[in-house]
Length: 424
Image (cartoon, rainbow, N blue to C red; front, side, top):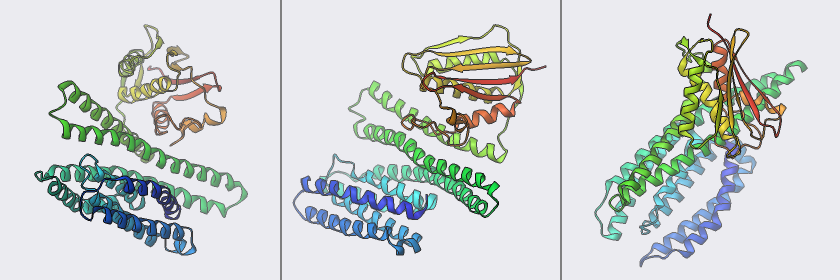
């Protein structure tokens, strides 16, 4: 995302957030001292700064000095966030220090990994002061665990989010540069320019999507971890196990997200590795269906797999990755309770696997899009996913000398077909 557009959006968010901040400051119950005074001083500074950056982001000056504007805006945002964290340190039951995550996310989006790591380093002494103020206020022992835990988590978040932002920014910049070159060419190149612009928009949408996909599991992990730390002795063993299971599940979700991005990068660079062996595809389909049923219980998957199918030459792990993606998608996009069908057959020297769902279907104009990087069907933005799974699945199918296609009509579900040459 370009800095100018980013700063315009953040400046609007500040203006929208200001009334909520005023209400929060007004209704807070302050202890004796200057707490309330400094809360209103911080709010006044927030108001002045928010108005100034809102005007600057829409001025010609803001256009000419985008980097300096972003740096100044980051320093301002950090100062305001730190101010509120310290002012409201008396709120023992309110984890106000967690609003530093918002500032960290903004630093990653603006400046990538470097911005996130610098912000995490700046946060560490602030958290130390925060913990010390809270210990003094409530006459409790000073705890370094709060500082260590949040600083470590901020570093991890900076590395993950910053890497994704830098990777996507580089890809977007490359696409935009190619588009600018193509615009100077003959009319025959115009379609190439339009295609590159479309890919650039898809990447921009993917930045927003990844932000959401990262934020949700992170919030769950943070909340569960803090609950365990603060109430460990109060919770029963069963409750502890439930929180730990949630942390594990959401961590797996983050790992899967990073894994898909890394797989896509390896495919593009030609370093995606395969280990070919003799594969009983019928058995592999059966095992994959069983694994999906176990992971997504309860689901209804009907199978029609002949006892004897020709074997194929392939990488079992990669083929399982393709089958899992197809079956998972069919279950995810099908109405609750509707069956998913998985069929396999031998056809003219090939083994064909078909996965059929009863979902809303895919419009003809979207059937090519879904196999591209970051491609998602319009109207599915609320369904979790990165738009990379089918791109990876088709690349694996083609590396095996096969094909992956779809047949669908809106309102009538979709049928995905994996076709692989049988082993001679």
